[in-house]
Length: 461
Ligand code: F0G
Image (cartoon, rainbow, N blue to C red; front, side):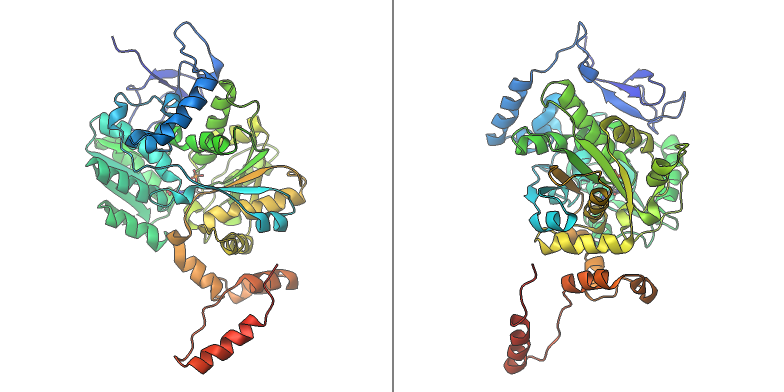
């Protein structure tokens, strides 16, 4: 008889079901809650059938796999497969060698935020340019091994890019639902490039989710939105990778952008599992940052009654233009259990932070830059202290939304009325970062004169 490697537990009513008993919308039939993947060793449970992994052996094994030539070992997700045994045949996982993303230091951003030590885990360095790949390799491998022909997601652009790529690798057919006119071109082009059936719906992300929710009840389509708990199993692995990169030191604070709110939940699960298994001695705080125009979790956080009220979302950081986040309860319990915070940041603060990250040679998409903007606020509030080690999760690559970057540097991103709201010092911060392209006649003397005037200016600090 085959022994189950995992079960699914409802995060609301705690009902546990077998992995093949879950309904097509991944909701608990009793309370509509979302599931999480449960292993025999979850929550430190060392029951009679629990095969509790040994921390030293795991660390050694994960390091050893780095020198292997097997695709499954080269994947920065499946290298940690001992903690995500979710597929029957590990040799057949669908991988683009995701994960293995760099951890950069950001000394100038640290200074601007008022702290000594700041790192960025750049999940935009994944194969399709966003953190979604780590979750997609996991959930799509499950879909493939369960024999689905069609997979689908609603997306603000990155999930769809990742899903389309992994589906193409696996030879599955994919359907993407995106809000028309509200996603960055780079992301739209990816789902087309990878051969997805791309449907632009005349609604927002939340509207796309609703439509897809109806469809999966009627057609045998495997849902790959982050309500699918297997996505989170992949998305928890950057937590493992990060502490491994830090020689098993745990940072004090992780800062994550918040949209549909699965990523913060996934990282929280990753840190909690490492803590339960004795891989790390404590867990970091996880704080979540939202854009002011798409801030339902922030509203919940500051509400003394802690009521979640969906909003109609609007922000230029289109990746997180989400008003009714599916995983808000999971994210909320990460904040509560790990002691983090929730903040909101303005459009101007996001743009400034993005330019500052870019100016360090790193670059990211606008939704990722909310982390630095939020960090500044957390420092000002005393929630992060100068000596704390902070890691920003940069979720997407700068080339995902190059139109935003070009508009910013041409000073065309904001309306005149918005520009007028800035103080003189804020305006000069933006002006120092803005690098408008210069159009010149192809005349050496003209070019030389222009260069001379630029070279005589001091290098910004
Ligand atoms: N950053 C980027 C670049 C994203 O694409 C997303 C979400 C987030 C942050 C927020 O992560 O939803 O887990 O809180 N993008 C989704 C998509 C919704 O469809 O690509 P979250």
